[in-house]
Structures are given as C-alpha cells and as structure tokens.
Image (cartoon, rainbow, N blue to C red; front, side, top):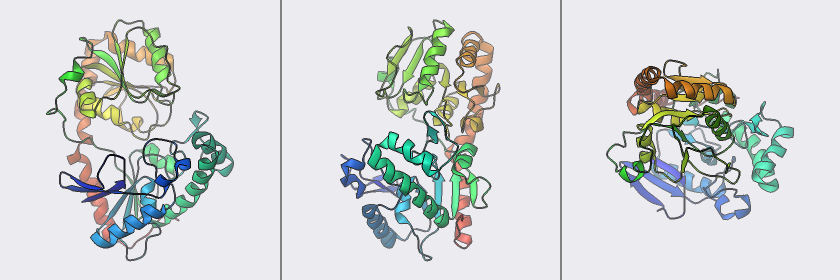
Length: 373
C-alpha cells in the first residue's frame, strides 16, 4: 500500500509507516502564501498543478489497482482516463457540498450550496481572495468528483446526506475505525497531571461549534465538585472565563488522551454542529467510559440513547447539565452505560470495519467505471 499526502515541513518526502509506504508531495498551492489560511498543508478543491504532476507520476510508476481518495487532494488526479484505476472516495467532512467543509453558515447549519450563500460565507472564513477562489473551485471540483468517482463511502448517515450522495447506487456508509490499543506506550507523565478522582472529560477544539461554551455553562450550573478536564486546542475566540474545577491541557498525544478516557467518569461531546462522525466518542467507548453527546450528525449513528450513552439536544444547557448530573450521582447508571459502550465499540475496530472497505474495492474492480451525474 502507498499513501500519498502533502509535504509538511520537517518530514521526509518518502518513508515507511510499518509496511505502508508514505510519499509526501509538493503542491503549487503551498508556494502561494496568500491562499493559505492555516498552518497545515491545504489542497484546493480543484486539481493543483504540482500535486497533479506528482500524483500522475506516482500512478504511472506504481500502477495501483484502486485509488482511495480522502478529501480534496484526490481531486488533483481528475479527470481520470478510461484506463485509470477505479476511484473510491471517502467523505469524512462535507467536502462535496461545502467550500468550508462544515456546512456551517454564521454558526448555524446551512441549507446547502448556492453561490449567493457560499461566496460571502467562504470569504468570511478564508478571506476575500481565497474565499472566492475556493467557492468557484468547490463547485467545479464537485462536478468532477461526482463524475469520476466509482464508489463513495460516507463515515456516517449525516455525512452522506450533507454531501448529497445518500441513496446513490454507488454509495455506502462505512464508519471510521480505531487503530490498535495504545496501551504499550508510556503515559504516566500525562496521567499524573489528572485529578485523582474520576472526572468529566472533554476532548476537542475549544470552539463554539464544538459546544465548548455550552459545556462550560452546563458545568457551572451543575454545581458539582467533580472536576472537568479539558484536553484540546485553544483558539483566538476560546472562552477565557472558565468555572472553578476546570483543568485545561493542550498538546497531548493521542495515546495519552485515550488513556485519560479510562480515568474519566464520562466523556462529554456537546457539539452544536453536525459532527461528520465523532471519533472521540468511539475512543471513550472503547475505554468503557459512558458518553454524553449532542444528538447531531454522526453521533446519532454511534450512540444508542440510554443504552450506550446519553443524547441531548444540541445547544441545550439544561439537558446537558441534567445528563451530567445523572452520571455524577448515579453509579449504577454509569456502570451500565460504560459496559454497553465497551461492547458497542467492537463495531469500530479494524477487524470489524476493514472488510467492508475491501468489499467495496472488489466491487469497483468488477464493474465498469461510473460516477454520479
């Protein structure tokens, strides 16, 4: 297997991750600072000249049986010729319909793509120049991707609906999966920073769309002595006024975060936007930790209310505080939800999910190339 991704500063152009060869390519967009809006490499929604040359060369040299695209970088292979390998595209975000990939407009769910909505929204997000280029590119790239893709995989029902591919004959919902247990990696230096007693745990960006402000307000109203631990990234608009009992940590490696779930009373995922999946919920469940989450996006696929977790209305401080109070005070409820969550997490292992992806590979190799119109 070969993985092609964009070159990031400080990393080699080629190396191996176990048996997987990783090739990092230079893109034309990276040489245009005015188009960049974040520190991470960014692939445009239309073919990038530099990426297209590198990917074409890789295809000619290695001749893969199947191309599995993730996000906009795969569009640099388009259009694909009739003699090209079939293309499978996994939709982790709302990349088919939204220039920002999140289907959020002014902090609320968008009704769908339209030039009059997308252009001002993307311009506020990226800046005027990049916003206009990205909006136009997203509309063009969308058509290219729909025509060229042999099979679409959505990580949740919400992602399928938001991208407009639900019900298509060449589409399936296949969830994300967790990598192997990180238990063998050292975590003591991280876990010693945590409270001695079980705590509420929030993992994610400290942003409004993630429901962080809703969580802080609910925790204030809860009035419990149980600590709230926050592990995530601060942003310029992150709240600075946090309630007593809150501990905030940044830059934790994933293996330490996953170990922290095992020490938590419950994980809280209070997103107010339609989370495409919700990997943090799966990580908590795999540790046997109950999850309190918003009933939105892919979280609805993952959690079964009152069996593997508790679902609340997105943005409802009252419901979130009530759910946290139930977990805070009811040991039997917490233990019951945690046991069921651990069993349910078995649906999201490599062994459970990968066969479905392999079956899709087999299906596209057996039929003529076809995309959505």
